[in-house]
Image (cartoon, rainbow, N blue to C red):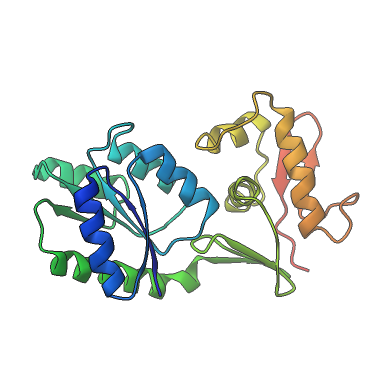
Length: 227
């Protein structure tokens, strides 16, 4: 049963979509605010996002950009403006599809199913493997020797930044900048604490790390070694 998040401030529209998609055997979670929706996306696993452009607290385009900073979750954007330029902007910043209001619920369902199918086909290619460590970017999961690695959303995103730049040294400032969508501590040493916690889960000996290495006076680097 696909789990879908709807970020839509029009309660009548949101309820209509929720009822319709629930009847199509989908699990639906709704949020009227963009920032609340972002928190849900960081704390729960969803299969797709239906995102309204016109939100009261943050522009839907900005929400889309923030989601794309940490996830390749399929996104279907909705707008009442019907402007062709809006559609272009939405697709350019990472939306998978775009639907102007008013729309036929059957068309929305067809488009949603299409992006879910595409995501399912590409999910396998999103897996990153480093020896015994496997990380799936889309599913937001990590496994060591086939066993799930229990990381917080922040720790997973921090690990993902490092592995996507494997072999490259990243400073604390660069890491914090890449994770701006999170509610961060105000000092850069917080990165050190989270790195230590990640090591406790993925290193054979956290005191002698082989995956996440410290480059003294510079930052951290994820090693490419296979083990």
